[in-house]
Length: 99
Image 1: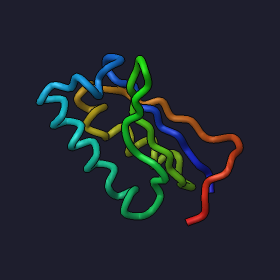
Image 2: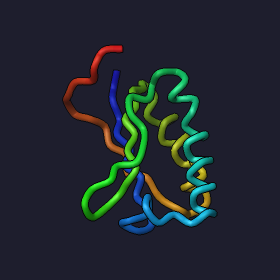
Image 3: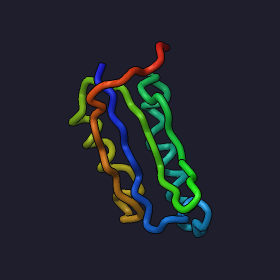
């Protein structure tokens, strides 16, 4: 099954550490939005990544329907509110652990 990587492009490098209350509420809705992928077991990993100078969101998803994934991502509250954007790529090769 194809594996896709979504990178959440935050509005500022330290977004995860400096969210306002309004942004935190949007991020809570963002997490709830992706719950169906988690519940189906399609989501391999999902969450914030903190580096020394940056933060970003990361999701790794297995799915045969990349257009449905793109459409679903476009309806994410972080996108519809203009809080953040996604960069989506398909893994060309690699291995995902067995379930």
